[in-house]
Length: 392
Image (cartoon, rainbow, N blue to C red; front, side, top):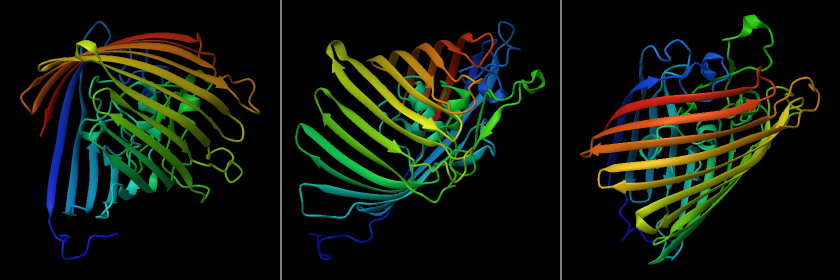
């Protein structure tokens, strides 16, 4: 039952603005990064600076606007600048949200637009930033690069004194190329978010076998509609306030590879995130993802697991994460190209907040990964980053 006009306020405007700007000093590895056409898994690395100098780079700038006309109608906008983006400036997310005022123990939320799947319990800072590390896990890196529902979703939620839960379902378009960069370029670990406004993912291209093609990355635009067929997702969340919570997402773009055998990728996956409050104020965040992606010729079955331990010491936060990632080749035709993949990564990070607007962070990331399509096959990378972040 809707609350009547006599009790509902139809015009209570409110605007909340959040923003960040971050710069980094990086000691990159000798392995060339994916966006440069190399085999590296980490965000930075061109080989020229390792051991000789430090690379200084803007990491990102972003602004989030949450404009409400009243308590049940609002618009959300997330704009960003990232050096890796094709256009530099773009829109990462934007949607309209309606929460009808009901006299019920169950709340309903409707939203339409482009939004990040609410499965990550690590990426809760402004602009879908990671709360614990500078570098995302493989699963969250891929979501930020290639997975962005652009459609409508409905959520039913209920909150009690000690527990809350929600169920969400939705339909979306314009994710028909999602999965191409993962299958061909392999897993990656970075914090780049692809813009839905013409953004592209640049990555290693295993199809370029000629030596002259080295350094020429493949470019994929994951947010395109090619088959006029919607995908769908389901999300379940449960939070027990004293102990933590869990999120489970199923996502399927329902790609029709018969429409465009090379550009459309049929991609589906399960993703689970858990947050546990352990003794001594330690937080454990394990997560897992398993799925498959394929077009008419190529395909992989993929999975990854992560476990992050974190603890706050007043203004100081420390985090340590282990990641494992794999892909099994499931290609139909190009048997001479193997997309098999196996890798591990360890990330250690520390951050210090100076008031509400300034944060300093340092991180050391190590990756050991092998792939048959890359000679000599295995790459070990180490990257050190120091960041200053301004937030308001």
